[in-house]
Image (cartoon, rainbow, N blue to C red; front, side, top):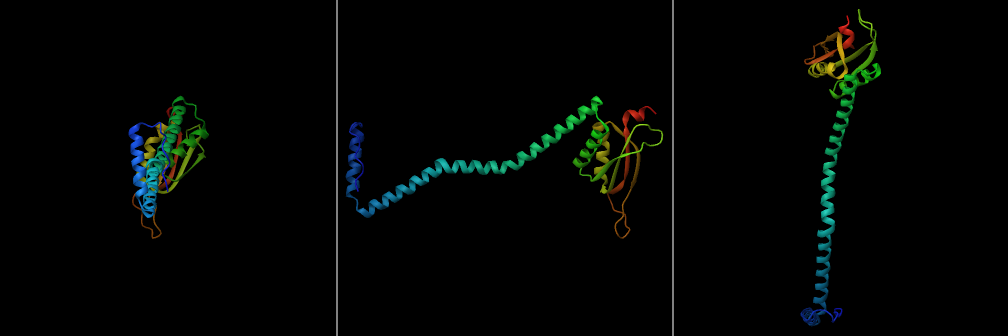
Length: 193
């Protein structure tokens, strides 16, 4: 097997190197030539892998690891955006009763509290519509933290609260849990009494 002939327009030093390489190649046994071709093929494949495949593979793996984090951050940004819009509507006083109920339900969900948010008849001495929050066996600490954030998020104030410690199937009171019903009214309605 002969190497391809080189273009004579190459610089003389390269022509001499090519001629020397061709002489050495021709002196090799056919088995050695096959081994050198196989080694060259393996080196070429390794070079292609290292230059083109491996960097893309590494970048893909890194992006695959970062994707859940980016999705979590995007969800947080969406939640904060929704909360900011809600707070803006609250501050401007443009929230409807349905928007207020939805905002209350979303804030309960963010706090990890499973509860039912419904309309309720106004408490005695009130004329505006009330919102009732019913829950069973929720973490009392989460409930108190959430309760402290309600006025700032919804312009509601607590009008009535019926809380109790739930009991397990043996009748023992559960520690750190609460069940009950909370009634909220618009904050400006409570000030006008």
